[in-house]
Image 1: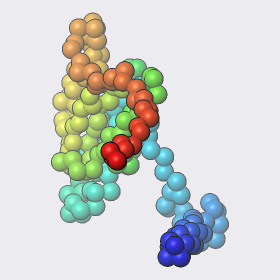
Image 2: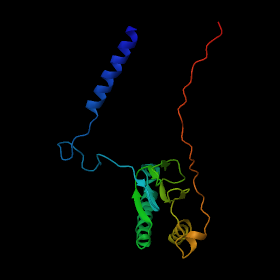
Image 3: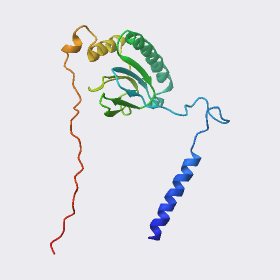
Image 4: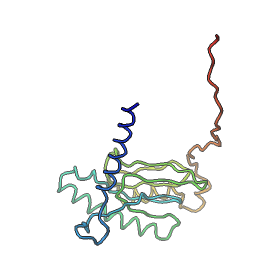
Length: 185
């Protein structure tokens, strides 16, 4: 019993010490690093969106190649942003490896961008449907064609195209009381 109490007390003290030491200084405080964001919000997609991502994993690419890829990526980001400006499709450039997709009913699911072929590219997301990944650097025309096909931007195409809906079941878990078995005496 004493060992449990000591272990519990040790865990509480360890947690309390960790909470007080790791806190970041307030913005503008002495010693705060202005180049590092203090908080980063995970993007939540609730409507058709093209997400442009550039992850920290790109640091493993040789410097000259990464610089050239970053330049081309930024050019594509600008062009795709212009292309989507007169549509109902949103555009979101991110540097996080996680995206949350929220359906109209409040159900959320997570898309992880780590472990893909390239640590940069584009994800086409329409909540309720399977997302489409375009990693690396596509030609602008190919990316525009993919956007038109995925979101059905051509006249009449939205109703005619078969989309692959993500299965959302109406299953609601119910708690059932379980009584322990009694051994025959």
